[in-house]
Amino acid sequence: MSRGTRQGSNWAPIFEVRGGCRCRAVGWPGVQIAGESTGLGAARVSARRDSAVGEQGPDGGRKPAKATKKAVPAKRVTAEKGAVKKSSASKETAASRKAAAGKKTAAKKTAAAKTSAKEAAAKEAAAKKAAAGKTVAKETAAGRTVAKETAAGRTVAKETAAGRTVAKKAAVKKAAPLKRQAPAKKPAVAPKKAAAAVKGVAPAKTVAPTSPRGESRTALVRRARRIDRELAEVYPYAHPELDFENPFQLVVATVLSAQTTDLRVNQTTPALFAKYPTPEDLAAAVPEEVEEILRPTGFFRAKTRSVIGLSKALTEDFGGEVPGRLEDLVKLPGVGRKTAFVVLGNAFGRPGITVDTHFQRLVRRWRWTEETDPDKIEAAVGALFPKSDWTDLSHHVIWHGRRICHARKPACGACPIAPLCPAYGEGETDPEKAKKLLKYEKGGFPGQRLKPPRAYLDAGGKPALPLGAG
Image 1: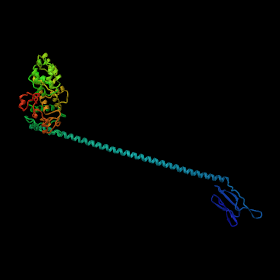
Image 2 (image 1 turned 180 degrees about the vertical axis):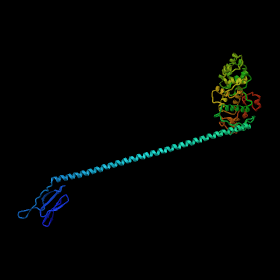
Image 3 (image 1 turned 90 degrees about the vertical axis):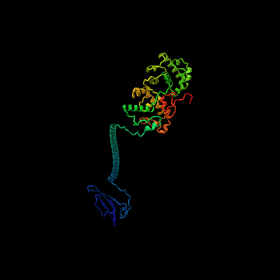
Image 4 (image 1 turned 120 degrees about the horizontal axis):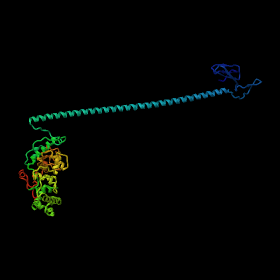
């Protein structure tokens, strides 16, 4: 609703209907008419006197205008308040809708982000699985390649074995010896060079080196016997290195040889047997006198008890004679299987294997057996040879262990059986250096016996010097 405007001397109020039409009232001075239109087109009109115009007096003048309060219909106020509330409510509703929409949008974005993260994680997991699958495939392919190469290697090995078999058959037909190359890790020294370092010995025959690993029983027997034959050519004069003239002297000397050298025993026994030549004499000897004679051999008190005891047993049980049976010999004080076999083999001509420290070391080094017990070694080695060879075999092995195949530093470069030895290379392989390691007649030194056999002297051997002469 708008107020009236002045036109000349009259007021021209404007009648405004909220429905959108306007009307003018002319000739109604000092009054404003305001109307409100309802939705049905009816108009309610309220009139008030303009406070700026005032009232007309009786004399035709105007009275001062009284201050009047604007009369606002209650319905209008209520309507306006309702409109304000509606507007506020609509604004709040719109704001809440916007906030809800924002929350929904944020939730959608969060859900979209989570979905994207899940999809990314799923893609990454799929990529890892694919990579793992490729790796497994590669490893499988590599395994197949290795298997193929292994199969190819086996095929080549079979073909090589077949070729070797054909070569062996051809060699047998032609009756020509088959030569093989020595292993790269342990090149065998030519037997001629080794034999050249040993004086008075014919060169050994050329033999193909053999590896003992995976060796059959037959191959082991052949190799062991071949070694014995080679040693027989190197030591044709091998004999027991104890001086003796009868079985009694041999059994006493063998008991005294424990924990000492044969040389020391040979230097001691001449005085002993000169004073006590028979078992009866030694059985009746004064222990202190015997101890004084045996002092150079070491452990002289224990050895004195043994030799006096066995002399008494011989005198009382065997009539002063040394028995020729193993069962009887081992009953004597200080006599074991080793001593018994030495006596049986060298005094009675009955075969026996003497398992001393040198014998044990060499048969394990040659891998004839892995046993460490002397009785088991005796049985294992005895099964590789005829019984008739046992005594000479013992001499060959012991002599080789004392002269060339030493315990700490074997002279591999001067060894005549190097091509047959699986332990070649444990010692000195240079021929010149190895030659300096040789002992006794092989190194140009005296032997251990004061009265050696003629064959030994003819081969260039030298007798040992008496006690105190050197």
